[in-house]
Image 1 (spheres, helix red, strand yellow):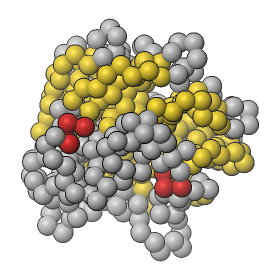
Image 2: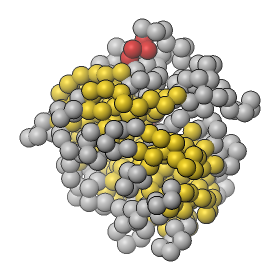
Image 3: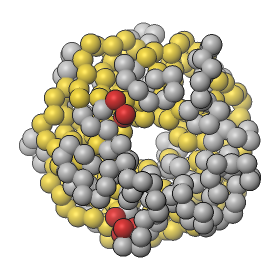
Length: 377
């Protein structure tokens, strides 16, 4: 089976080229976890996240300009912020570039694709070095029958300053997710410790502020990514800066959400910096997982069937540094972990009974792996 990988450590310049600033196609053996690269397309600009169109063989990648010295880009350079579309060959799964399209914002970080394949939702936080607090957008892009962008049908502009003690001077929307029915969209705002909530019109692609406009977490938590439970009654918010997980109850009919538990994702006895990245509910719905980037581990939790609350099982080393992303294969029995600065992907078996993970003994060297998605199951 095939998986698709973004390759960048966000320090390379605009020219890119294999193996830097690329998208790779890898072949994965589900029985052993062995991986091999079958195609690499270079020349991208710091690809940050990717997602498949669920209806047609198309892959989307967000690219963002990052200067090697972290200086602010020029207006010309900012044209490098784009949604890039690839066709997936229906026979061998390889990629071919279809085109690039502006995202309607700066420094796109994350994206999601509606199940009908008609809308791509993108979060554009702006650049940490940019002192303008008004930079930060969420955009919804309508795509055509061929999967190519047609128009930006929604653009939400975030304004306002975080508290002065925060490290960045803008709200910094970080990711974009939906509930299982796609009735509402959720945008974690890193620097103001909120998750914005919107009603989503699945015909027009417009976003309208929800009756409960946001869910608040602890000051300094730094919400980054979230994951819904398959039953739609809970979602789990991963806070990057204090390494906690906030468990929310969710009423889909009323559109309300409230915290029922806050639990640490920090390993006991670890006194380093707290920094987490990605979170997923396991395929069975009985476990939850998140990456701890400074402990170089995956935290594994069990989920209470009645309350949805979490109990820590343990932390499992990812065999590389600063794991940024991870994904389950379509069977749910294999996990791939992108250890970005180690330039490698490690594979793990998932125990179907306990949900715990163990290394397969297989890994793949691939530059700056930072986002992974499997091909069609």
